[in-house]
Each structure stands twice: as structure tokens, then as C-alpha cells.
Length: 207
Image (cartoon, rainbow, N blue to C red):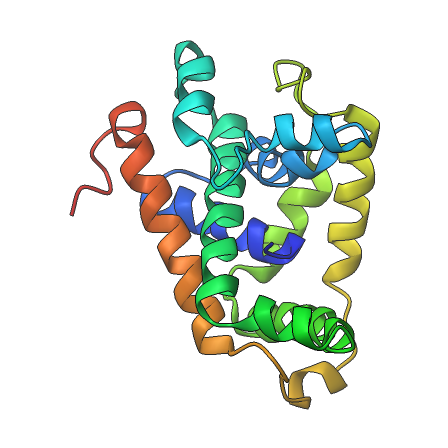
């Protein structure tokens, strides 16, 4: 699944496409599905996960009465990101390679760290993104039945630490992932989320 930094950049990009100001609620929402209480069933519920796909429709049906809502927009962008990433990893053969050679898992997670650094270094809104997340507070109207507030605060703390990376990560080459493919996947996440939410957030991104 995408890293915390990837989820944050996807959510921020989605807000930009809608002509909205990014907000702490939006960014926390983009982390929230991973703040489920720690057992497999609750994690699957928080991700609206079926056997083979993530049920965006079930999420939108459950929370349609509260749209438009930036926290929920961020939450949805996370679900879309996880779904598209899963397809990307399967289609690119990365998962198959790791299953055949379990030792490659270490290189895969190393690539996440390297991608974080390279994406942030090239992201023009990096400082604003950090400051907005740092000031974010857990919304009282959030998806409390899905996300645990204490766990979400811990995810926020770790995400802020992700902004502090060694300079060497910028020069180190990826081993399993392609930065171009990662960026393409993130763009797909934004476009898919736009398609799902246009009716609530207006036609600012219709073009």
C-alpha cells in the first residue's frame, strides 16, 4: 500500500484539483484508515475491504449524508490509493517477485523510504504540507467507529518524522519500484477520487 507520504501528497493534490485549500482534517483523513484498532477484522472494516477489492461504494453510501467533508475526502483518497496500489503491485509483478524471493521484501520497504525522500524533495508544497499536518487536530466528527483517535495521533507523529530524511536517500537508486510508475499511480488515485466525489465538491475540477 502507499506510504504515509504518498497518501498525504495524493490528498493534497486532490484538494488542489477541486480548488480547495488543504486542511488538517483532509490530511488526517488520508491517514485514518490505517488507524484502525489493532486486529485484522477492524482493519479490514476501516478499509472497507472485500476479498478482492475495496468497496468505495459502501463507504460513499454510508457517509453520503456528510458530504462534502474534507476529512471524509481524505479518507476516501486513502481507500482509492490502497486499491490502485494493490493493482499496481500485482500488475507490475512486484508482489510475485517478493513471494518467490522473500528476501526482496527488505528492498521493497527500503524503496518506500527512498520514494518518500524523492517525492518530498520535488514537491513544491512540502513546507505547507508539513505545517498543515503539524497543526491538525483529530476532528470530533470523524469516522470514530473506524479510526482510533490515539492511533491516528501516532500516525500523524510518524508522518511528520517522514519529512526528515537523510540527504543520501535522494541519490540512492530504487531497486524494485520505479519513481515514474509511483507518480503515475498517485495521479491515477487523484483522478479516480475526483470521479467519485465530483457531485459533492462541485465542478471545479470538471475540466
